[in-house]
Length: 331
Image (cartoon, rainbow, N blue to C red; front, top):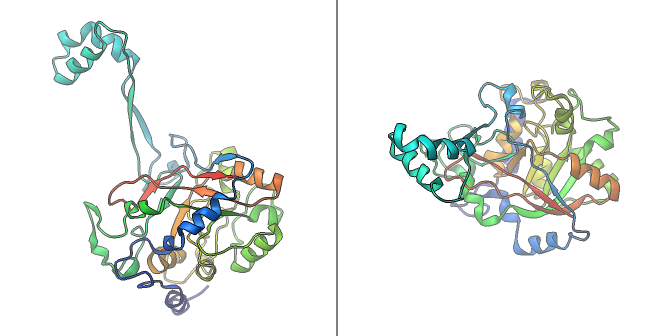
């Protein structure tokens, strides 16, 4: 296990504060230029569109954890309301809302349904904003941690990435196939920088500036078969932060809970989730979690093409420290 001195040496090496100016709030997304998007668009050759988003519902993986719950979907208007309110609304429901809604249904064929959802913004497939994790009272680029208040993140909120579109060249690194695992990368063997290089070489792809790296650990495929959101799998070793920095990657996502390996024995003594600290706070590099890579992995294995146009803009929630996303890969 590494110690805090090791961690601080890496943090000093990967820190991007000031690289794009003192006011920058999007970090490594600055690597995604117009030329990069044009390059990525040229990768669409056969017209295949693949969703990388998981379902937002009551059976999601967050039900296994106490601090975040699965989404709660509630109907606010439905077909039963249409019949009931037309017949009874003005008489026995003496509130303005019921009367107003019943008026939509009366004496005409128009009907509608409406609903709402209550959920943590990081309840399923999502991006971590740069304001999500910090240490020593500072966010990315040195912004004060107390600028995130009960009203939201004043600096580095998820809404700040809107101008990038989160669209770039995506590269899938299929660690499951490289290891020869049946379904997923089992715990106890974190994914190292050297292994990422080996996977890329075996697939015949390179990783370059502005790419969004997507790592298949097989966790989501395993979850779809077991429904066990608490099962632990392997993730990126914390030193992969240096690998991401050296390759000037724009963002990284994986199909598991934390992207990085959750085993404290493979981390840094005295810290929790050191790669989160390095990526979000020091590098300014966003993390995507709970991505459903099952269909994309199958397609890449079939045609041998592991690069694609990836578009993954988060829901633009002002001041949020993370947000849902339905990433789309196009080949």
